[in-house]
Length: 297
DNA sequence: AATATCACCAACCGCGACAGC
DNA sequence: GGCTGTCGCGGTTGGTGATAT
Image 1 (cartoon, rainbow, N blue to C red):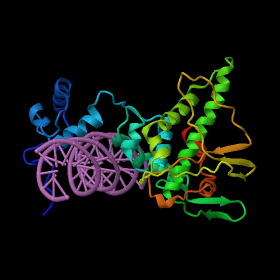
Image 2 (cartoon, rainbow, N blue to C red; image 1 turned 90 degrees about the vertical axis):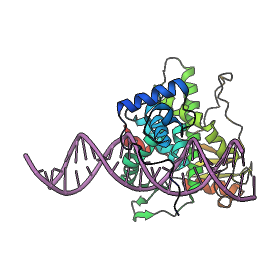
Image 3 (cartoon, rainbow, N blue to C red; image 1 turned 30 degrees about the vertical axis):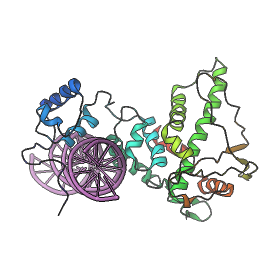
Image 4 (tube, rainbow, N blue to C red; image 1 turned 60 degrees about the horizontal axis):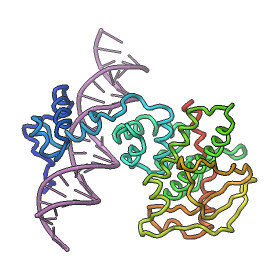
């Protein structure tokens, strides 16, 4: 015995919506709200199932939907969010006002996935499929766990945004050098996301409700001439009430604040600063989103 | 000009989560 | 705690227009 259909199929219209149907749906929702989607079609005089009405409204008719092609910046954001969130299109859409999950999903499947593949990046893992070495040619990269990659990419994006904010702050202090608008937007995206529930879930929660802390304050290592410092870090203060810019980023050191957590299996990350360091090594060489620049500019 | 193939995207389907009883 | 109804999500499909052969 199969699953019962979501609604009576017989007598219901399917396929593309007509303008008259759209008008009926919009008029009804404007006057009454959608209420129960199941009963809406009957009340609105539509020969559609409630599910179809909900889809039409949320993906097409909603007044706050931003139609039109995605900008390069939006595409970049989708890629970065996908690296963090995976195929959670609704979560990605929640960070992109005016864009629907369906739209983003279509963008990913038709454009972005292929684009990443064409530049040698696995669109599911966001991992380089090969590393080319001038001496021995392409090398296979050892696989990293998805959560590790996502965490590291997420942290990388945040670090990048914070570093940029610091730079911008110092630039803004010098009124003779106005900031390019695109740079500002880019930073804002990440810091906004970082302080959203998505960022919160990565900072504070894993499935067992335990902190996965990698917070040995003395942990330090040197990689490629940079000093990596690991340890707990206070949340960046970004509210307008605190206009004090963050301290200037040290060009010789990377602060890998490892107090972040993840929502996947807690077995995948051990509670140690060594793990946090491993995250960096694991991710080094692919945490820079600049590879995308050439494809968007 | 006709046909095949590709790309895009709106819409559908099935499943899981959740709330109310 | 189990059942049922509803909703939302992610994967997939199918129609349509564009492009290639």
